[in-house]
Each structure stands twice: as C-alpha cells, then as structure tokens.
Length: 425
Image 1: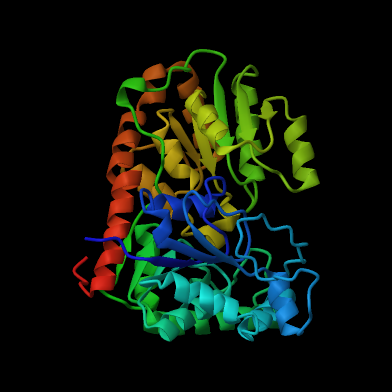
Image 2: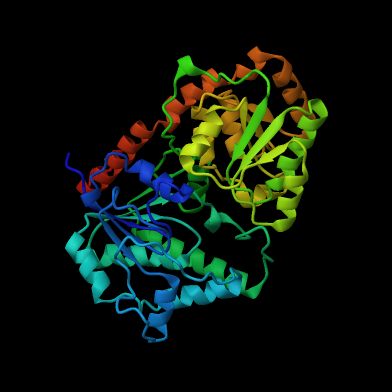
C-alpha cells in the first residue's frame, strides 16, 4: 500500500533532540520526508525527516490579531530556522488570552492555504496537548480540505479537574481555559476518525469519558536503542553508579534527593549521575551540594544513551504528591531505560499506572517508598544476580511494546487504513 501524505499539527516540530519531537518522529521511522508536512509553533525543524514546514509563532499570531506589521517581510516562517521568541509568563490569564488570539484565525492567511494546497495532504494528524486552539486548527484543516482527522494523545489534560499542580481549581481563568479545552476536545472527537494513545490505561480512561469504540489503539513510546541480550550491563563492578537523565520538574527533585540520601548511607562511594536542566536555583543548589550526586547538566541524546548503557543502574522516579497531575504519564525515557541493557530502578508509588505496567512484566526493580528503596538498593549493591534479574524481562518487553520498527509499522498502517476507509485496524 502506498504511503499517504500526512500533515502534522503540533506545538513542537519533529526533532531528534526533544522528547515530544522525537516521540512523533519515531512513529514515522522510514517514512519518505517528501510525504510529511508540519504546522508547528516552536522548535528547530529537521529537513532530513520532513521536507515541508510552516511555522506560525505566538508573536506572529498576535501581530496578525492586532493587524500589526512586523519588521520581517515574511512573518510566517516556512523555513527551517530556529525560533527565538521571547517567552511570556505562563499563567492562566495569559493562556486564555493566547487562546483568544489564535482562535481569531487572523493568522490563517493565503500563504498558509497555499502551503496546504501545494502539499495536498491525505490526512491530518494532531499531536494533542493543552492548547484548545490546536484542536480547532486541526479540525478546521480537516473540514476545509475534506480529509480525515486522527490524533496522537499522550496527555490527560481534558480528564483533569486541575490542569496543573499549581492551579487553583476555582480560579476564573483556570475555569475558562479548562472549559475551552473540554469544548474543543469534544468537537474534535466528533470529527476524529482514530485516536492513538501512549498507554492502555490512558486509552481506557478516554474511552470511558469520550466513547469511541473500535476507533483507538495504544502504541507505547518507542526506543531507538537496539536491545542486545548478549550485551547485558558490564559496569556492575565498582564504582557503582546510578543514572537519571530527564526532566527535573513536576516534583522529581524530592525523590531524587531521597534516593541520594539512601545511597550515601549505604555506601558513600556510590555515585548518582544526573543529566538534564534544573530550572529552580534552590533545587540546583541542593543537588550540587549533595556528596553522592554527580550533576552533569544538559547533554545530547547520543550522550544520554551512552550514560544509560555505561551505568550500573538507571532510574526513574515520580513524586507521590503529583499522582493526580501525572497519573497517566509515561515518560519518554522509560522505553530507553528498558532497552539499554542496564538494570532499571523505579522509585514511585504503585498507584501510578506506568509502575503497575513495569511490575506486571517484572521489568524493573520497584520501590514504592523509602524503606523499600533502601532494601532494594542494599541488595543490588551486594547481589549481582539480584541486580540483573529484571534485565531479560525488560528487553523482552521492549521487543513486545517498544520496538521502534514494529510501532512505526502499526502507526503507518493506521494512517493507510483510515485514508482507505478500512477501519478493521
């Protein structure tokens, strides 16, 4: 079956270096770049994976809304240049006003229509997020050009009573934004042909609130690491190191410091390697002061893989206080942590569905509290067989659910099936 022309609508462009961009890019593994086009708001696009980009920044949308000319002769960027917009404070009032600006559709001009008509897409794919207007944009393209609409969704914003942990649920601006999101999501679902979710529990939750039987499937995040059962971790000898590479937001610094304390009490020679950007000066100071922690800052994805493969363990954690906010989260790093051949440790309450998933498949050491964490780490430091026990299951799980080639084939078959009207997916 011939590949179809896909127009992707997303906040962030396809990318090999960002988590959201890489997640979408992995699903299009092997897809001809000439058959992909993308409308996006920010990021630095990669023309080696997609030949057709159209960027409208928040500043462009605001200028169009205010009927304000810009210094640039072409404010709507179709090139692959990076974005350098000044960031505006992310609060609910600004997010509501931003939504109003975008929903005016004054930014939708002849250049954009020419971009779409020249590409002539067969289908529109939305990467869902927390912006009501993005659902409206994708739906409008689908309706105007008479092409099917599908969605990739790894977020549960629409299902929440509070969009973010810091939100006051009865704040007028928060209520307006959440109401707008639910309204646009419901309208989107009335037009959507098929939905792809990042985990089964997320799919089940959406099916319960927005029933669409037979029109959804779970595709777990993929890893580009090729699992090798004959190359299971070689760095189990001292010095013992545990690596965390990822996001330090959403309350993760607290469990990371707890883990560092446990390690220091068990063996002061063990090192916890941390890679990523820490935005809070207070958190950064705590991290840098801890004698067990080796903080390396932001590193590229290739170097991340090198760190994961050459550590004694890799770890992921979540803050128990953030369960309501992150219940259906499935970190993009989990697939790589499973695939790298290094024993995987998860420090998080078992109330998180992703923890239940890993425990069901015996693919990681699971510590639900500090006492259990201490018991597990003590045994991992002294018992090599115990340390390596989950690795074989982890690699088998990668082959089953996180294989990049298999997942891309499933995803691309969905696209072809929707375009052909054959919904027996």
